[in-house]
View (cartoon, rainbow, N blue to C red):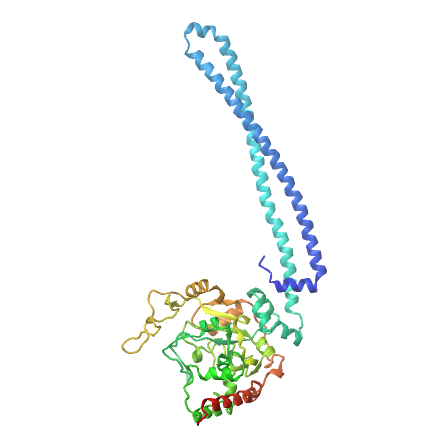
Length: 481
């Protein structure tokens, strides 16, 4: 019987305790009867072994007697004629003793063969009795838990229950079996966030940042709080405050040295409700029922992405866009872009989702990239600028398993290695393999109050507070301008 998820165990304890107790009693009775049966067989086997030991001892004794008689007979045969005549009577008596001893030995051998046969038969009977017993027990348990699984998956649910079961904290602590058991009860649409790990070798439309460079977005996520964060969230890890804003502008992404340029940048950020504005930069971007690797990924055929249940997003966060409908198995369109806002810019923990890593992509054993690099991870190219494939490669599965073995604290809690070079198809295959088939057409998944317009997100995410603190910091930094 396959391992039963703990979530089904717990459900059966709460919802069908009497049936569970009855099954337990039946199993205990069967175990008691079987234990008595096996004990009786064991006692019989013990007696047969004792008898065999006695018979072996008797046979050994008779063989010794027979050997001793034969030695006397040989001595008589080798003596001179006169002595042989005188020893005739003794020889006759020895031959009679030898016949008797051989008869006893022969009978003992037959009895020993019979005892050995009984021992073998008893051992075989004992072994053969285990299988039907175990099959009977396992079948009872399998039938019971299959019934419980159907009941669990059919159980109605409330908004409050969804909010509790799909909290990032609860999902993060679930193992994969319990995670899947939970998901089968609810609509199973997913949103994904593709990481940029390795050398970016492709792009679509205007999404060309970092082309030809080596990126470490996945390992950065693992080493920095294991959460996927928005652009602003990466800089405002301690929340919106003057010090965090100062640290943001002292970072490598900003090179503004004049107050006017800074305030112009701030105006464009905080007064823009579309792409590039505060709401956009404060949002985590995801694709629905597919992976946006063409727009945001790195290496074709070597994409790492994280999938989150749409039900989690809808019940826990503010969002804009579509969390329900995808674009099919082949890939995603440019407008398949949902925006998710996490209060206080904390990010979404990857352990609340499933991390997907390609299984069989040939990669450099030192970098995990499909391509060759120098010691500084600068890509090596041909004379015409083409990336050079890595040599002496290992599979991407082996690379990451070695990485996680060396860094066990960085292994994602729920990890899936996928086949092929199409991550969107891999997501659909994984859902099919795990029977995640329930679907909803409700665009808000039961939480319309969480579905907002992007132009309203800035207020919720503290745009005015950010703007005020940034202006104060600007006045301090550029006092003479």
